[in-house]
Length: 254
Image (tube, rainbow, N blue to C red; front, side, top):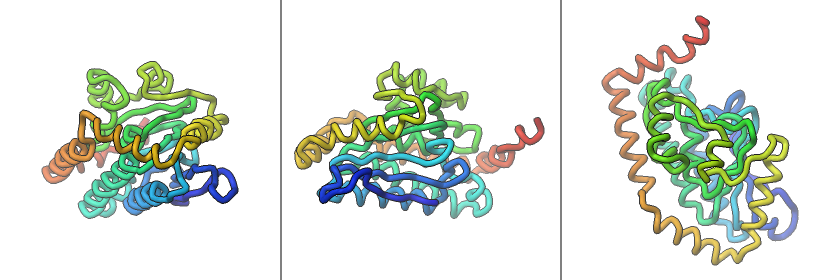
């Protein structure tokens, strides 16, 4: 359980691919320490001169269910601040990773998961993958910055306000998902793309990543930090607790 890094193949250069895997059963709701561990793993992989592509993957039913709401409810403001800082670091680590990052997404990709894949370079998804920001249902705000990198502006707003999800097929139609495959073929498809990327000159790939980030029209770090201010405001005035206190109770009463 936790965050691990591995290479899919043996050899002195390990074929230039590092696989960073998230595993927080039962649904990959990531605790505060997990976000920082993920950031460290991605940054460490990117600094390795033998690595030319990072695959970001997850074990279990879904790719990511966002922050651990129960941890925040139990620990209060300290956990909220920690989650904000941890998400900021993890999202930034994916975006700033010195080499391209391929996200392999299965099942649900929600909340903080959107921050990760929205900042990845390429997304490969399973047929059952869904993407969304249920933040308003969980007393939070944020990651609209990253959802806006996956879908057009007005669709982003509709998904954000309603907490609905979009399917992998829909995102593929918008061009933000590279390929949609059966779940049992997801890891192989992500590695196939990663190998194609990793076959390029490593130094040139790093220059290419820096160049592409440099021409982004939106500063994702500053944009997401701006959003986080409203999450903190919602918590300060009590709105967040009021909404979070009802989290899950609707299903319990059904």
